[in-house]
Image (cartoon, rainbow over the protein chains, first blue to last red):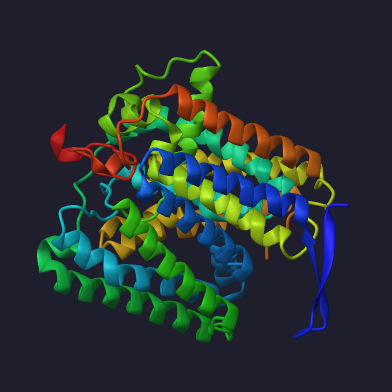
Length: 382
Length: 50
């Protein structure tokens, strides 16, 4: 038997622990932590632990950027988006001043141009088809969704294809990153960033009120948002940059492609210093891989600690097709758009970088298109 | 689905360990943004540097 039943006296409900998968998740995370500690890399261990905490927090709070965007666009409900803004505001309070004042830390920045806009739009279409963004894919895979396992596989493939496309799209033009702290200093930049987040919050509340929809985040979302925000700060402290998700997928795919005999080393993207180093060195030398792996095992541990793990049937073929297409679009879009909800939107806005808001504005119409396509795959628009 | 998951996790962790043991590692974990000239989380250069 792989499951055990414990009484939960406070709720009177039974909590079923899946010992096999709880053990597998804890053992896997422990092995990775031990390996990086053997290399004398405590910051790497901290990133795995931070990712683990994020996996638990996302799963327990059922925190979903994808569903939040969809509920806002279809019903006008703003609670989910406001929960997401709580995460960004908490993160910004540390990232903007620290990145401006300490040379050891940096914000999430990106150039403004067609690549960012096209990438964010395509990513958002894929996000609604797959029913999960970068972080959402990670924690639902960790939570036992076979459908999202398919989405992750195609996310990785799309991400490698995106890495091959990005240099060409950058030739379409663009301008250098615009960072609030570059113009207003550390504290002025923080004030402007928090002001922009408050303005966005006021706008989504106004839309919700106009449509007669609820705009209050649930208690679970508020608590989840605060915990996730604090964990984002911890990941920033350990890694030196805001939390990002999708670069790891590109690295995993490129390394798998290399193992299968494809030579990516001559591609322009893989000749830039950062990607070149990531392709050559251990995946455990890449900050986003460390947090992603931690998040997967954290979500798996949290899921297995509360009920039997991955016991549901595989979804219908049309739903799997949506996951595959969505994953492919997300992967390609994330490379062109310089990240996902986390790396581009949360990290960008929390750094006071204009590209975060531009990403958000470009992703909104992409979500509308994605939501309209969902019924073709047997998925609800809501 | 559980069998698929067990296979993915076991093979995945084994692949990570094999990759780690067979690849060079020059020190602390880095992000592509840590490198000079990087203008995005993926390490893309700034438009003005081209």
